Figure (cartoon, rainbow, N blue to C red):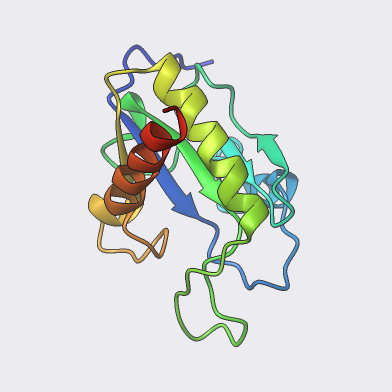
Amino acid sequence: MNKRTKTNFIVVHCAATKPSMDTSAADIDRWHRERGWLKIGYHFVIRRNGEIEEGRHIEEVGAHASGYNSGSVSVCLIGGLSEDGQSSENNFTEEQWESFGAVIDTLTNRYPNAKVIGHNDISKKDCPTFNVGEWYAQYRSDDEYSNE
């Protein structure tokens, strides 16, 4: 295992799959292997029903964001593509958002100095189809009020 020695970023992705596709970490693992990769590139996958699946081992260097893999951990939300396959779309389910928040909480507690970013912050891709920085600021703001 190629162990990661630092974690500066938590990079959020989408699978670029249609809302009707019930894609799993095993599916993505197969896709990535078909591309010649060692295994799935993501550390966590959040399915349409909110189920959280593990991909690469959390301590292992991922394969998800060129130039950032050795210093980041990744979360992939299933979805992000319109049903007709023609455009990016923020079409994640309520269950996914709940699980996503829980995964982000766990990762930011484990890696308190890591910055939560979207793949689109460090590439020309639409992935994950929403502004992660805005989502995270709102999420943290909502979290502060819920603890009062």
